[in-house]
Length: 206
Length: 398
Image (cartoon, rainbow over all chains, first blue to last red; front, side):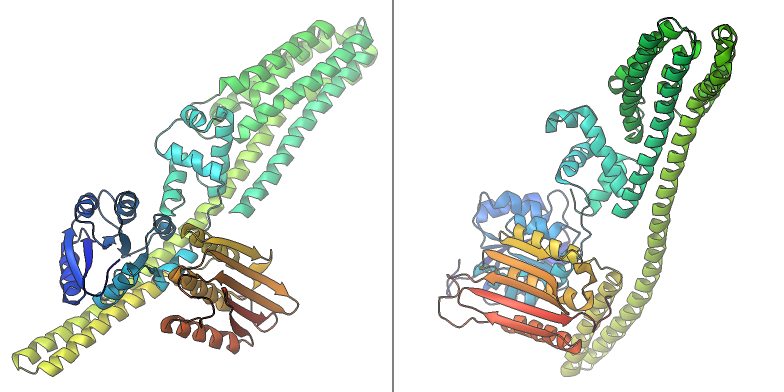
């Protein structure tokens, strides 16, 4: 992706201005890294990355609008670039989502700029880096007790679809959908499908 | 969570069979009464009542099922599911009345079926009391009119009448019992959640104390740096700055340790998570895990699974990974194999393990040795395997 003579061109996206500018300043001190764009949200990052075609995008996970993983999902179809996600707190399921979106690096925000630079180099060279802390968290995620069908029902229902609409979308009988919903409520020990949807979202199941 | 759900399922089948049993006994009693009673064309009539009764009993099953799967939606009664059983109940009542002339037989089937609908609690109570009163009156009318014609079966009719009049009440009691069970089950879950919330509050206090302490330390270190810089002692100032950074990192690590203090999942879940992560990263991952693998010592295998999975994720060259955790004789054995990418490691070349990874595996080997186990690394030409064994009896399970 980069030969010895040229610098690694990096885009940074983070909604926290202090962190973004401090990290950019620190990375610019590394001889082989050039920070070519600093973006304050996901949409801006998508736009800038499509225009500038950076070698590596360093994306904050928690951003308003598009989060870091969503930015990677959008960009991987249009731009040949590598993605590194940084986060303060990796919510359950997010590493799985990130890996599926082709993210090559994932590390906590607490790592110092020297380590971030090392990860950028590794990722720019085609490697992958998953921080042990993030991996340990992801491995101790609570397993989802719901079947794939039940998750489909819950996902549609959480977007406000009625039982009839869910049934049509999944080509099921309304009675079957009701049975799925009741199974979901029993498994999660909650009273309403709204509670079930909130719980599933918190735990990264949908 | 799953254990609770299966316990409730057992209670549900118990409730259903009790209700169904009442209904069947009642149909049987009606048939027997008709056989004994002085009704014209006895055989055909009793037979029709018996067969219709079985059909009616069967028609109450969908109603029971709908009762169980109530979603608490305010859409109330789902007429499409409910209509057919109610029509069958009404039809059966009319048929039985035509054949026997008994008012009880006309009303009981539909009265029973209606009890199984999902009524609000207050409505249900009033309704069952009214229905029971009505049935009692019909019983008296029947006893006076129909059966007094053949006085020899008057005694037999007492049982039939009583069962008929009591059926809706017994049904409602059974369903009420079921509702109580569900409420208890939910209460147990809420209690567990409450305990978890309490724990979180304690955690918040701990975090507050910890952060307060470290922030104070950092503030002092920075103040000292400021003074040192004013005095132009740059070397000492730099030292204080570095110390401040270490303090910040300690604070962060301490907070993380607090937050993950109680976080652990069964080994089988951990392996399943590992498989999902590897698959998400485009690696064909398989797990072969003993059903009782949760009994394996998590204190050893937990870190082993984390470290080895991270390693496979990190170099990402391979395309296949297999994770195994099984008991063989007196040993728990964990094995993770991944193929190594030919593009990265040319055939025949020595497999290079990066320093950090090597250190991680050394730490795990020490850990395994402490509990009398072993860690073995097999670097083949096309694959790389880490095997960890731990004696069964040596370690407490958790």
